[in-house]
Length: 81
Length: 129
Image 1 (cartoon, each protein chain N blue to C red):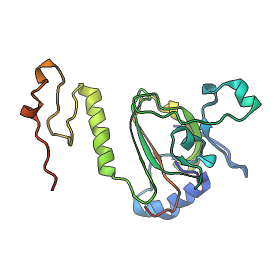
Image 2: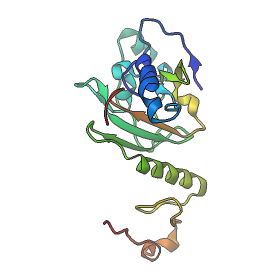
Image 3: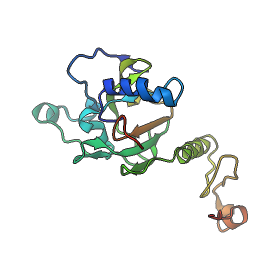
Image 4: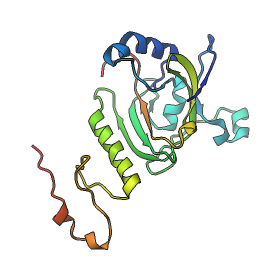
């Protein structure tokens, strides 16, 4: 799952899926992202670049509807714990 | 998902993770430069500039069923994570619920008027050794 993306020198970044944010606010000033993850509620949708099966892809959470997902954050690659 | 670049993920996978697990980790390694997704999920540490150890179990309808967030020095318990996923999958399939300390294969509970006040008959607290 996820489409292959071309990667240059600019680092691709992820974030909330734009359709879920107010478009006017997007153009006028950068939206301050507020935490909105709560148990029992919809998982906030986002997209982000990923390394998977040897290629760089764009991954969108909502593409995984119908599957179980474990979303796992960690401080950094090459850390010890 | 971490704030590292996809290139860092690639090298970590190829140089280290693939030596710990045959074939490396099989799932997508996501890059969250700037911590935008971490902020959305409440795990981005502004001072350190990283996402701390948080994990979220999301069901096929896109709902968050469980979350755990740890500060950096303590690692996760993968067995407990798997137990929770198995329990939530069992709930989804059967509608039964899991008493405290439930493990796969152990008795579940069927909530209803007949069970009120009778949980003691079917479930005993586990001894902590």
